[in-house]
Image (cartoon, rainbow, N blue to C red):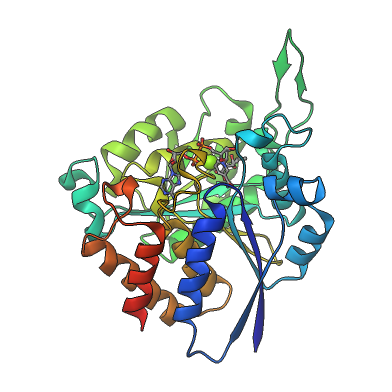
Amino acid sequence: MKKNIAVLAGDGIGPEIMASAIRVLKAGTKSVSTEFEYVEYPFGGAGIDAAGDPLPDETIQACQEADAILLGAIGGPKWDQAPKRPEQGLLQLRKALNLYANIRPITVPDSLLPLSPIKEAIVKGTDFVVVRELTSGIYFGEPRSLTDEEAYDTNRYQVHEIERIVRKAFEIAQGRQKRLVSVDKANVLATSKLWRKTVERIAKEYPDVTVEHQYVDAAAMLIVQKPTTFDVIVTENLFGDILSDEASVLPGTLGVLPSASHSESGVSLYEPIHGSAPDIAGKNVANPVSMILSATLMLRQSFNMDDVADQIEEACYAVLNEGTVTRDLGGTAMTSEFTDAVIEKLS
Ligand SMILES: NC(=O)c1ccc[n+]([C@@H]2O[C@H](COP(=O)([O-])OP(=O)(O)OC[C@H]3O[C@@H](n4cnc5c(N)ncnc54)[C@H](O)[C@@H]3O)[C@@H](O)[C@H]2O)c1
Ligand SMILES: CC(C)[C@H](C(=O)O)[C@@H](O)C(=O)O
Ligand SMILES: [Mg+2]
């Protein structure tokens, strides 16, 4: 059996961490019967440079036909003034593929406890999932306007968009600790009032899951104050973006956090939660764990290959445990050295 993986390495550290993840994937899957074919397509700033568009036609078509998509990261100062920025290409891709459910697991493996900036007593055992709505809300709402005098965006949610992400979160909670926290700003926002009402209604379909509502400002505090109290968090697009970056303080770096994005029935996309890190790009110092773990999410969620995913994850954690860590975690390992060490564990 052959699986076609569309590879969108993107910009900045994207190509560096993608090269690492693909090397690890090749090592981890070398003795399985499934054959993986990795084909690169231009995307983001690299898409603008190659084809004048952050999401060239060839790229979107290849993504639609692929068995899974691996995405590195996009963006950077080079394209900040471009008529269509790399970030627009990313939003367009998510929308075109209907990737409404962005799953962001936040874990702090024991190997990272000594490196976390937060006290071990607080952070030990952190293991929760942010279920972020990804194709609606203020990112996509119309009208929007920008002049020198005034600017506005529109936060809009239709009830069916809330229903499907909330159901997804309940299903994920059912497979975990059965505790769901819905994060909103229902004391102020109309969208959040509809969100909360919808969660209350859908909750009746999942009586085995306990539900709590938190305002986003309080949730932002609790994530770093009592991270182990969370199991599954469901929230709208913008809040999910912000809270998941905040949660990277728990493991100590954005460089270890992966994500998976799913539609109702089409292809899924796997990408780190962080960006292209222009400040460290091209230096072989980026932490590739976020991309490697995104690849393991692909193995699990698109191909049911839990065994290989387990082996790769264990290899990563073993290497971290030995103190081979990149600069973001206070170490000196280069991206390629870390990758070599993971591959050695797999062989
Ligand atoms: N999904 C995406 O492709 C995505 C996500 C977020 C931001 N962006 C874009 O990336 C560009 C840079 O944004 P930013 O600087 O605000 O955020 P960023 O996530 O790129 O970087 C924030 C900080 O985290 C560090 N960091 C991120 N990933 C790392 C890794 N793997 N290893 C080590 N350190 C890492 C960076 O060096 C930087 O100090 C912008 O153009 C932004 O729009 C893209
Ligand atoms: C680059 C940007 C559009 C994107 C987002 O806000 O969704 C990023 O921050 C992310 O988290 O993937
Ligand atoms: Mg983000």
